[in-house]
Image (cartoon, rainbow, N blue to C red; front, side, top):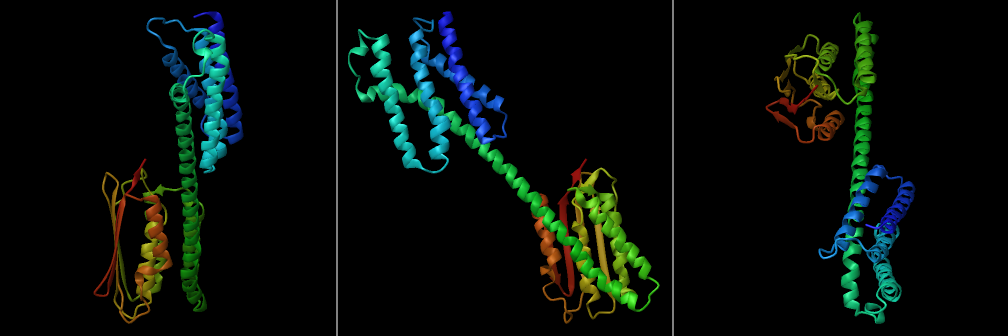
Length: 362
């Protein structure tokens, strides 16, 4: 390959790199500029080699570079002007008109200028039919422009995925922020009742609430917490709420603890336990019985069952429609979209929550 031909090829790449860099700076594309430049450079060189390849004459001729440069410039206009200005703004008619005018300009440059220079004695003497020009011009331009459209679509999809993650995290933070007021509202009444009676248990209740709030405000900032930590706070929460049904029944809490390497989204199970205490305490029955079972196997499969009795004539209508349960259902859908199964049943004055969950293992 002659030095002049190599220089022309380098000039083509330099023009493309300059325009690409400018475009990427304007768009603020999050995907590395170097990756797109490398991709496009490989594409342009590959297309050029196929375009110029001739078995009978393997050398690259200077006129082939010039003709190909005409297509490159047209594809750059399409990639970095027509696509963002018209296609991405859904101005399809304006794009079609602009595209047709651009193709007409490419054909005009090729027929009226380039062929006059390089094929003055043959093709340059007259204009070829339009159909032949289109078949000659459209394939390389479409091949050079199509991948850019696909690349931009990939970038937009990546940005959309990141936006979905941000929205999901914001929604989770909002749902989690609802738990603290919900928890305080349901426990302040209990604290107030003991304080009025000058109960000796009032300091213990305050300390228990303080520990739980500390856990909610500081330890629950992350998406997951250690299962043993969650169980410990669940025990604290059960002890706190047992005071509401003192002398009216019992609470059975059984669990197996497999260590700190198993993680769970914080405050999920606590909502179900709170719901059981709230409706049992407001029930008219005397023998309250709350059973809580938590079983986790070595592969991180969790089975959680919370069962409580209530009286049908108490104020426990629509047990499965509280703010806390609606909150936890939404959190399960966001954090464990395909790895949980929640069943809530209300049968024969027994309200039962059964949750199967695939936990995260460190």
